[in-house]
Image (cartoon, chains in turn red, cyan):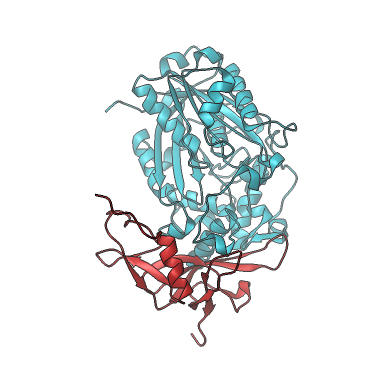
Length: 126
Length: 383
């Protein structure tokens, strides 16, 4: 059987990002999968795409101190639909990002140097 | 199934040049130097070697390169590359190869010139399109996030993490070839330049050149050699993830699996172990591995290390050579844990030698807490 993939999982993910959508995949049993893949882990089964509401909670966090430039956040975010992703929490000082903080997705548009990618902002009043 | 317990023994150990090696030295030069020194250490010749195992981040096909370099055609070769725990995996594979009758004298070697050529040049990273945009400083940021969870869930403090670095330094003072031997205090660790919170540069392993080798053979051949054999009693290998995003629980490493597998193979429990050599790429590692290998309960690692328990004179000797934090860390440090564990059993560790070491544990870590491999070594009395 030959069914050539027309688009890579990464390309589909980025197409969603370009529309402002945080996409993820689900197995036939409804388990959320991230990063996007060709087949489901464990079973090797089929994966379907879904779009997240874009809300999540900081699971783990660090502030990176580069040799040049300002410190910045790197966090792992547990998205409400049940998957975890690496991202950056913005619009807050990096050292003030805390585990348990509620955050909402925002897309950084593509530039000549870098494709579109998702970051997160604190949810106001959460 | 073949009986593996004690079917192989580490009979020779050697470090290559360490620290900052001569200009233009290659990882292969260091592996060759380590190989010959380790063979000399036990009284075997290069022509005796019929199994060659090696890995380095600076070569995609390390075993091939070393077979050419040394002019050998071993019956068994293996360059399994799972980061810093590769060498524990190699020891497990040596056991299997000896049990299968494929080889009798195996060398496990490592070499790195990362201080000379820079860490970035020595360890090219796989492209990760779902992590790269966020510029994590890898590997420190991955371990820092694991530390953030441990601090959040168990109240572990930066001072407790710093106690790991200070304990390692106090051991390094007893090791003449350790890279950093000057005094180090908790305050100095906390006030050092921040790398990736909560880690300062003193929570992070050294960046050195270095390499070495160990020689393993059968118990029969081990009897006639120059060193006391350190028998391989048991091994355990476990891969839980590759990227930090996919680590199932950041406060529990795969050592919670590899340790029990190794204990079962060795027929021992954690209480039987006299010295622990635990891969301390970052201060959080030592806490995680003490917990996951069953020395203390989950969440109690911070208080344990702060009590002085793992320092020289403490009740649980850990990283008796000074560790990756103060002795040497050329990028994939696992081989040095095996060297120290074997030497503690041989009783050749000078000022840092522990009394009556019959069982030593060497635990390797690779990637971003990704691969965890445990090797338990024992004296002849444990067979």
